Image (cartoon, rainbow, N blue to C red; front, top):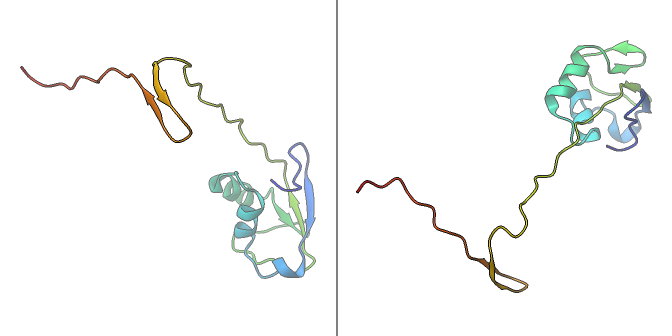
Length: 110
């Protein structure tokens, strides 16, 4: 996210370049990484305000509008741990890695 604070309410002023854009599209672009469903939820609940008033998702921004954006927290992504050294490495260079992995048995009938 850009200059949006995660711990308190943020206030932004709309400039001439952003005027005419729908508020939902503006927030999707501004709050990268925030799911659209969350953006629409804070719009519907009235947490996002323009000039101290509630607006809906189809509102078009005008120059010098003052936006109130609530604190938005993202869940921390957990990195998937790859087990180290599970399969023995047979060959490795800058472009290729060859490992010795046992074949997966199919459910074939005998």
